[in-house]
Length: 96
Image (cartoon, rainbow, N blue to C red; front, side, top):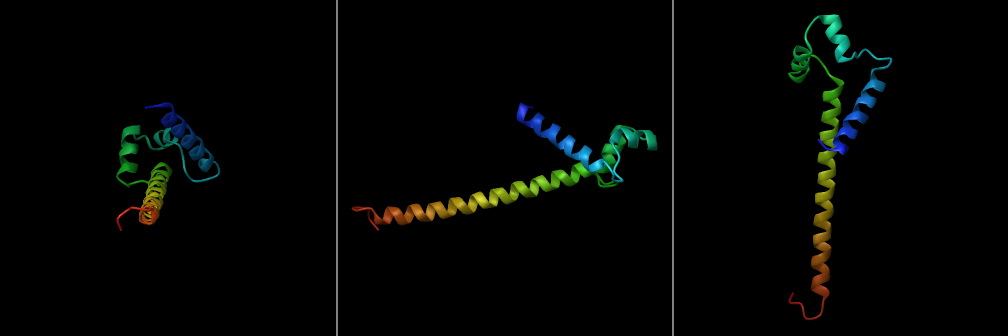
């Protein structure tokens, strides 16, 4: 894991902590203490969707944002290719 990934993880943890303040969400440690289930069991439950998790919601939002950015970039590349083709057609001595 590089520093950028670690920084992203840390920022995500701070965001999640801020979201937890004043909400019904609890930390994993609190859920362990309240339920008596192990961290591994609780993680398995939220990975399989048996219990909700703000982390999974955030991950899904990130994926959607990444996919949207990728689609925007694809569209821009398509536009640039069209503009390049039009410019190439205008060059003298270039076969049409």
